Image (cartoon, rainbow, N blue to C red):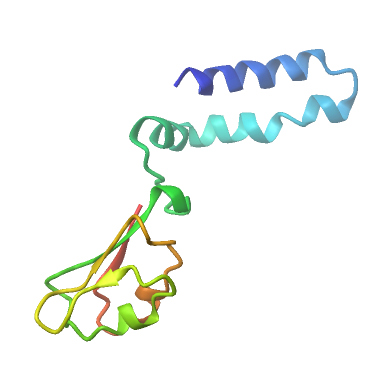
Length: 117
């Protein structure tokens, strides 16, 4: 959390000490995001969550067992074969092997796969 504060102090120091207009304006995007999206910075650091759902390292794909029809389409379309299951058990995604490409969610005709951000 202290890194967020350090980032803000550093950006303000750059603005105050830069000798040219470009140097003075370079930190503005950082300050802008800190001002308007501080809660997202905090969620990333403290909660290890991405509220926008775009950080691949912080998301996972999950198969809802109650919606899974056990058809295997998701497993057949997974490029790294991280989905296991059969006609008797719902399919599950091995989070360690998953590359978070979204192919399974895209191909599932029953919308049984969702993204956890």
